[in-house]
Image (cartoon, rainbow, N blue to C red; front, side, top):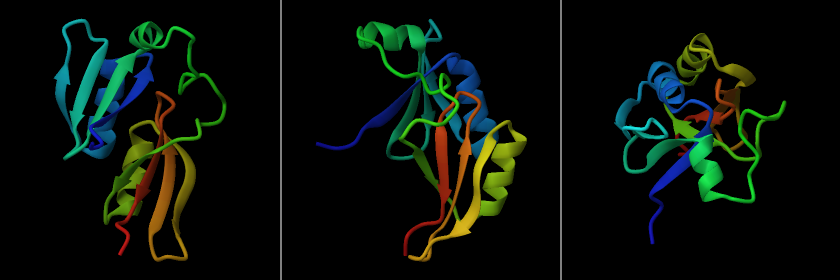
Length: 129
């Protein structure tokens, strides 16, 4: 078994993909003709977005949408970079909300948190040595 991809259910797949392109420099890999599913080229693991309508058909008992609560969901997408401050500011300039400014952790990693316009919580972090 291997980890293949993460799918985030969102209100607008195209907007989420555009945000991740602008904020983090990823490139669109695929968007289906209906616009209800799309993927970003992020390396070995794919980051995907699916419309709430697709989520509702996949999960008939419902789910908590990333953009439906005042606080972020208790899960995050972690993006690794050596340029934390630059990445953090670029995400905010693209429309993210700052959750936590860059901070050095006791184990030597620098970490910050932003919440994307679609509600997704993103950790920006340096590699762990």
